[in-house]
Amino acid sequence: MRILVCKNYDEMSKKAAQMILSQVTLKPNSVLGLATGSTPIGMYKELVKMYNEKLIDFSEVSTFNLDEYYNLPKTSDQSYDYFMRVNLFNHINVKNENIHIPNGMASNVELECETYDKQIKESGGVDIQVLGIGHNAHIGFNEPTINFERGTHLVDLKESTIEANARFFEKIEDVPKKAITMGTGSIFKARKIMLLACGDSKADAIYNTVYGKVIPEVPASILQFHNDIVLILDEAAASKLNPEDYKLV
View (cartoon, rainbow, N blue to C red):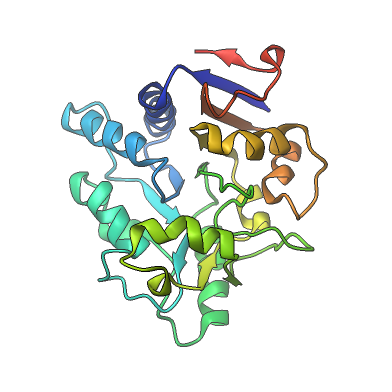
């Protein structure tokens, strides 16, 4: 596990975007695993800037998003489909047929999950998976539970996650209570994983991810076993780590 600590959010976002740039430059038909939430927005802005400056070409790239709210239309301005298009896809030359996001309105959720995992496999697998992390150390929408889920599945969101996401909705009652998410097993299959975290509110989750026991009650702890993972943090998120364990960039 490599840990890179940046001075602030902007520097963290630039570093993350540079890693995506390197990946796509080396392999133009890369398969990118993408995340939503406030943390990666800065990275997406940097990637759009790089695209406008003709530094990166997404024409051969395929993308798979981690998750989507269940029973929320993609036309909703709170859906992750909408989020990705507003923050990234509408501003770059990725082909629409190469964009994959779980269908939260699927009538057969089990089939949707099986199909999503099959599509990832048929694409050749994810080359680099971008992750954020929740205050309770969830990755994707894999909440603290009694076992690690292997594949894409429907999950009940914890009250803490619902409360954290309530800031995006008019009232907490509007926040979806379920989501479709890649499982920790699906995430773990990515050749490279890049986890982003910023702010002191994530410091405990990062500490437990790096130093804690590998248990499903701390979903991100499974990443300790991945053979190619980098954490890109701002100083606040890294505040509880031993300075000997990370590199300042």
